[in-house]
Amino acid sequence: MYAIEVENLTKRFGDLIAVDHVNFTVKKGEIFAFLGPNGAGKTTTINMLTTLLKPTEGRATVAGYDVVKEPSEVRKKIGIVFQDPSLDRELTAYENMYIHGKIYGYNGIKLKERINDLLKFVELERFKDKVVKTFSGGMARRLEIARALIHEPEILFLDEPTIGLDPHTRAHIWEYIKRMKKERDMTIFLTTHYMDEADQLADRIAIIDHGKIIAEGTADELKRLIGNDVVYLKFTNGMIECIKAEFIKDCKILPDGRIELGVENASEAIPKIFELSIQKSWKILEVSYHKPTLNDVFLYLTGREIREENGESFAILKTVARRRFR
Amino acid sequence: MNAFITLAYRQLKRFTRARSRVIGSFVNPIIWLIFFGLGWSEVFNFPMARQIFGGVDYLSFLAPGIVAMTIFNSSFISGISVIWDKQFGFLKEILVAPASRKAAIVGRIVGDSLTSLFQGTVILLLMFMIADSLKVSGIPFVLLIGFMLAVAFASFGVSLALRMTSMEGFQMIMSFLMLPLLFLSGAFYPIDTMPNWMQVLAHINPLTYAVDGSRYFLLGTSKFPITTDLSVLALLSIALLGIAMYSFERATIE
Ligand SMILES: Nc1ncnc2c1ncn2[C@@H]1O[C@H](COP(=O)(O)OP(=O)(O)OP(=O)(O)O)[C@@H](O)[C@H]1O
Ligand SMILES: [Mg+2]
Image 1 (cartoon, helix red, strand yellow):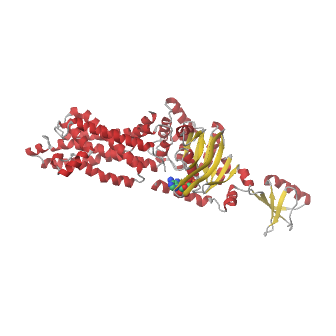
Image 2 (cartoon, each protein chain N blue to C red; image 1 turned 180 degrees about the horizontal axis):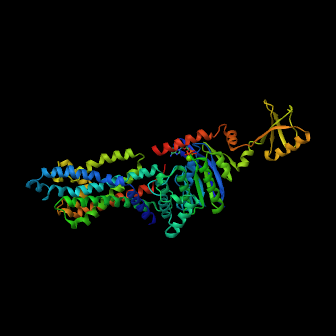
Image 3 (cartoon, chains in turn cyan, red; image 1 turned 90 degrees about the horizontal axis):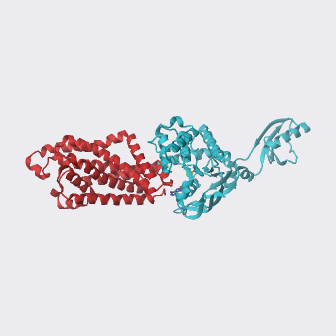
């Protein structure tokens, strides 16, 4: 049984095809990541899956319910953290949680307990009576995550959960996400344009660009698309020649005298290289290795980089612009 | 039901947080009262004038109008918070909830109407201190009229705000409508002495009926039969509330 099933899902805004015949499934209890640059169609996909936008074409079921025909059933099953902040800034953390709980039909002691538990979960219990206006970006984000969990959703949507946050806060939020999967057995659909985020968190990743899914699989599967790990070696006493062994797939001499070896798995290959060197009494001066990153995968598939740095500041600008001009 | 109570609660909570806005909302009516009301009340301080104003002094004549104006202003402007909610994303949080949207928006409108009514009540009590001929027994009925007026214009404000993307646009429409509606409501001078074309507009101005009905309960005189005033306000507030519910039901983020 799938938590999310999507068939040919498409959204047009006038001439622009924001999401273009997308197909994928998300299994129950899985963390599934949509990885793609700005404007790829990640938020638009989430908006359709969460019943906020009507698809132009195609269909999607979430928790077994059709997002167009049975939106209120879908809404009961899902929790969302939007890309743009969506808290009531004039109210306190507790009041924000309380209002959410009430709207979802929770009451009394049960609601109170859930709010306190969840504020503890995101380490905000000390700030529960502070007005949200005074919160930092990271605190607001954590509050939004806690809020999305009040009604015990089966499926959680996180739209760029760590965008614009500092590394420390990002690590915290990753921790919460992992714990939600483990302790609450939740299905999580997240979007991100951070390679490391997808790599760290997701069981499976779909890479999306210009509204189309261009690759899908586990992080390892995706990395295997572009082949090998690479080991770089430098020997003393001018030993510059290719090494042959069954675990070495290819070998190149680099202009600076280093030797580049293509191997299946660098961590396993390096000890073997050491053994070999001892047998042949070569002396290793330097060793380093490179494992393909999702960045390399994206580069390989699109000829472009996601460019986290530029992408990030641009994304923040965009968020600000959206807030001001929407 | 949950959504109704929760959203009403939220609007009231926000109101109590926004002290400066609360105080600001009293400034306008008080300025009118003092500079307009007290100023003219001396000019009209001769026996014949009482006839123009239905047998009462000018301040008493003006009082119901100032109360209606307070409620009208504050309920209309409450719609703008919908645009805030769009910009700060809170609206999405409601749109994606499984709760009834109709209940949610009615809760919101009722919450805002209660805060407007509270402001009107404060001004009403102030009026009792400075105008001589007001009847205490009229207070509950004036509050009823004030509530209907508030629901009508809060609903109007919400429907308008749902179609707008910028605060500036909303404010422009508001300032475009606000003063004409006030001057055409009989709040400051009787409708009977207006030029004919103005009288026609006054008759189709909903605020007219709120001012006239309040005058009936506070002063005992009115231009229209009180049943007319009350039924116009009741129908209007139900109709505008209906439109707001319909608009919110169909609201998307597109
Ligand atoms: N309401 C809208 N009207 C018109 N075009 C839109 C609308 N929403 C999104 N788009 C366009 O659709 C495309 C996809 O946007 P979307 O927000 O889904 O991208 P994204 O992957 O979430 O990007 P980001 O990383 O910037 O959040 C963009 O080109 C965007 O400009
Ligand atoms: Mg987005």
